[in-house]
Image (cartoon, rainbow, N blue to C red; front, side, top):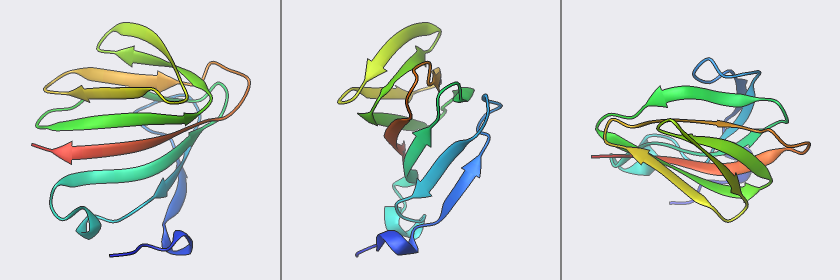
Length: 114
């Protein structure tokens, strides 16, 4: 299966009551995840914007930071993350991420199901 970049859905959305909006490019749809996931996306977070705190039950979400830096809330513990870092949240834990830098932050987000 191949998904062409020009066929990927794009949208700006406020996620989980975060600050501002984030730009989401869906890298595949639900069918493309073959029943093993809920989301696979390239997300850009502008300076001062965020994805608000939320839990993950019966699934795990991974963030792979491609570019920039951000403040990741790892179930209540703030951690600065940068390009090359991987964040994982699952099993009833919570997380959020906020771009506290002066440049856009880009990441890949993948939600896999139990």
